[in-house]
Image 1 (tube, rainbow, N blue to C red):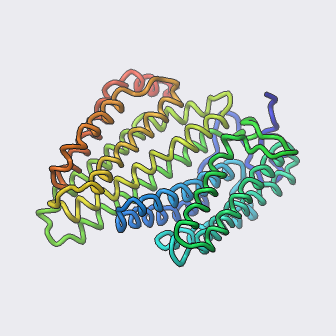
Image 2 (image 1 turned 90 degrees about the vertical axis):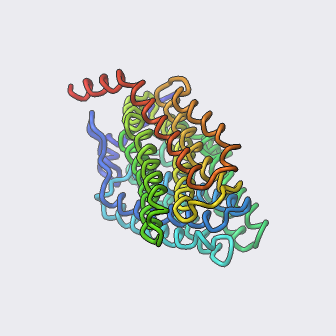
Image 3 (image 1 turned 90 degrees about the horizontal axis):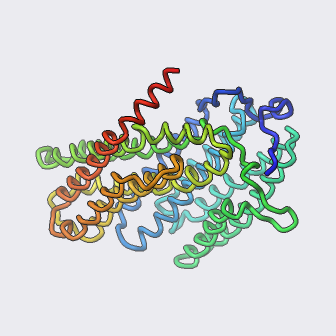
Length: 408
């Protein structure tokens, strides 16, 4: 596989692309963080939409919307890995994307009702418009191979965009099916290397990225999701009129959020960042470990936030099937996503602590239906804490090695 020109070349550094200094990675800029604020709102909208319709159809709708929200954010993360946010044109792009993202987030609860066209229009504008900007920026920088790569991406996203817009003009099941087709096209794109007849296919060398920056961007999205979970916990507790009844659920929800933070950020995030920074093919690592495998991680946090709100608003209610799926499914998704992510970046086996955690959650399925919502939530928190403590103790040697390496 041939090496493609990187944005550290003179041609790239004179245009709209980032300059890269050897041995360091580009910082996450304030305009990127400003863009991310919109997705705090998007994650909140998703969790509230699921909470208000815990049916199979409601869950399917929220899953589709979540996949769209993640995809538009992660594609923007790829693009801002190359673009220099200090350039006025790039800042204008980011602000336009922020505005479109705000419209998209606001339309989430009614995306399958009267705001379908607003959701689809904002989404397609972000996906296709951002790709057009990249084609122009790479043309200015004289990077022909990477420009063709984004032409391919733009064509894939345009076909998917047509499905999004056609679906927006439909109602009910036809809209859902059109949007499934659109997402299928978009999610298949990277796996198919965006093959286009006559233009060939891209390679992961065309997706050369600055790994440290990309890993940090994805870690920040995990923080966004965890932050939304804390907001839900605090808001529900503040709104409660029976503090004595909700206090135990409040503590359990907070400890569950702490355990989730620990499982990802204690060592996982740093080891992932090191792995992608030193990878021979960072584009390949970014595609699998961050673009795809962070999906269940973030989804697990969103679903767990719904479970936290259930435990705070109805702690003494019997745990029915939808509540049990939410309370057990959120932590299970989170542990599965973390395990697959860590396997990929560390090139290791499935972490035993995470496997045991998944086994314990599976063992709680039958008992959960005979317990209250609070006790089911408390037991899932205990499982997450067990995994966090187990991994911390079992990786003491790795921690010492990383600390020693950082000291040098």
